[in-house]
Image (cartoon, rainbow, N blue to C red; front, side, top):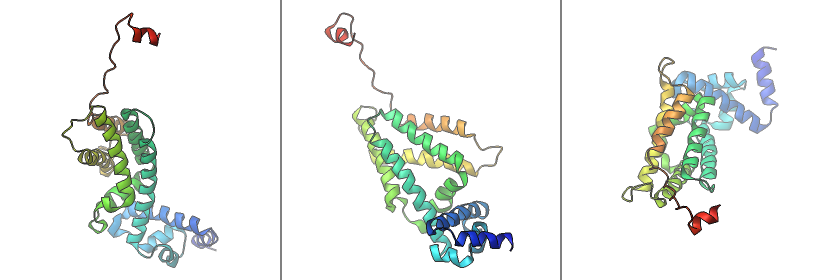
Length: 224
């Protein structure tokens, strides 16, 4: 039996969700190598070790495969951002946690993140990204964090929170776009993380200063 036949046999005996994930993982590799227009269903099937028809069984079309990659990963990202937003933590900690997660994902899974943002997220066929419930959910969570900053007086009162959240998320998208650069120009994950932190933290003002208490005052004595 040929290696490809053995691979197809193993895939056929796997659970449906495992087969689906195997096809998605293979699609990421093929889309990253050949691009959205150059990728072929047969190449994806070969990379996954499954029959050509099985790819169609689960996804139907190449664009549906891309949509599934996009949907699955935005759902995970929205869950993470939503969880960070509801924490009783300072604004800076929340913004830093989102950046660290996004840059960490970019470092660990550059092909997947690049496909989500550059190959499909910007596709005209996708329509308005904010019509996607998980994209809107992630943006809403960032908007909630920036609203917290506004309540603390760290955002000018005439700045629209929705527009500010779009700008903030756009900074993360710009970080993803650096993966399109050649190795000689592509920043390291550490440099990218520090640069993105510097940009996004600059969107909000510094934390409010804690007023100093004169020695001997009742409030200062209460802290001792």
